[in-house]
Image (cartoon, rainbow, N blue to C red; front, top):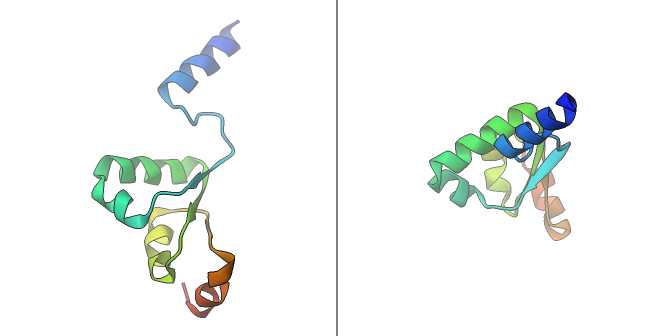
Amino acid sequence: NFSDSYHKRNKEIFPFYDVDGLVVFDGKNRVERDFKYGSFLKNLCIKHEVYAYERDPKNINYWKNLGVTGLLVDISKIKEFKKNEF
């Protein structure tokens, strides 16, 4: 079946081909250090909903500029994140 082989081929080329979203648990520093990984994430953000886990409110703008849809934060740090404008 053409449709099945088409989807299988796309999934082999691009592992996140048919996902609805993705959560990134790697920190800002790791993404910045690895240029290929950062570019990969930026491209993912264009086509998919990507959320990042972040513990430091100072990094909000980094993730925003990368294009993530939203952030997952520690419940204990919600007040810190609410204080920051972004």
